[in-house]
Image (cartoon, rainbow, N blue to C red; front, top):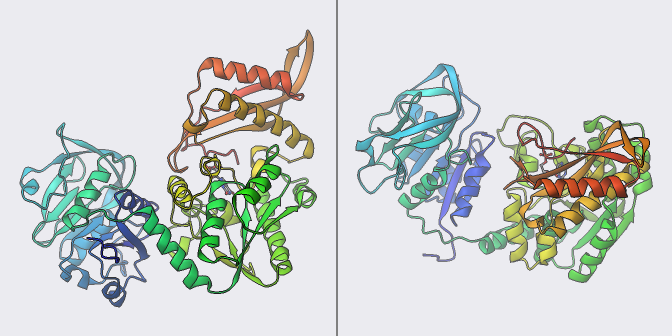
Length: 523
Ligand code: XMP
């Protein structure tokens, strides 16, 4: 029943680190949704939004404390399905007359969910299709727990430590889950969210092309006739950002490609050529490598490196903006994983974990208004959007490459000599991956040059050279990752090539750390 206005689901955000995953799961099911922080989602807003269903997210607050964040109580009178997740469940119970207590111990990690028969009867079955083996694995992360459900609610599933793991009021279509259905560690979670959407009458009529149309309209509304500059990195994020803005506001975009001297072999040339050939967008390539490398001299602290690079990037952009005559907006390909752990993403209520990536590197006083149209998306969604916009496959398939470039793959001080060695090793590793046709099975692959020398023996002589680490991971969204399990022969062949072909490296290691506890990059 697509009448032009999509069926809309509203996610009210109470600051969980994984709220965006709810939206992602729903988008995967072709359901249109928007996330709005609880302090913005007041009664008038909700009336105007006209949601067909509401999800209350998790969050760090406690309903046992005074002035706990909550949605307007009137939502429970709207007659639409509402699902509370973790804190969302607790706030729903508290508002409707149930009890929530601060547990002596929280519950974090895996739990086994078992059904409670009576609640599973009827057409409003949130647990439809689950429990084929009598149980499901779910992921819990909570300190408080519901101790008494509100009137009208029945238990539909429990776990060992959560007797009220899933609650339903089938009459009013209100549901509460103690666990997080949106995370990968709850394999049945997607099914639960789809069941909820099904109960709410969503037909799954929403697509990436509809998302694309909405973003384009939003860009037009937000930017109007102003001029925009966009920093290209050669990666898919900035390419999609540029293509979107160009589509939305033809003639208003200038792309700037900064060669900060921290790129891989031939990257500057190939990016510039690809862009000129594939898009009809003005592009100013800027060689700022001397400036960046001078600024990085003597710096070995990873955060200082990131901040230095971020600051210089902005300086170069600012200068360029002035040159092109009055650009007032700066577009960046920031994705949701870049934002998620940064201070108060989008003014939302999330707790600050660390300042991260592009977001953390930007000074407060930018002087240009930031445009980040991909802020809600994960990498695989950006790739889909790229295809939607007709980007060449070579762009869309590209592995991510971080803004600070090789600087964060060169622990310790960054020098031109180290970068030259690192580039050669990196090129060989990627060449090997291409030859073995593994590129598309891997999320990201690169070399890291360690600031460590070790003794070796080559041609009957002693060597004392640098150690290089190869890192290749699989991932869906960059939030979690596992090392890529290469065949031993691939690794030994690659190590042999690197040691033979790169003067300065005499030892090669393979990084088998997953994320968490490691991160994908070394710094
Ligand atoms: P980590 O190292 O945090 O990286 O596991 C997750 C993903 O983000 C990329 N990354 C960055 N991308 N600017 C970027 O544009 C950055 O500062 C940055 N730092 C990391 C990283 O390559 C991986 O894909």
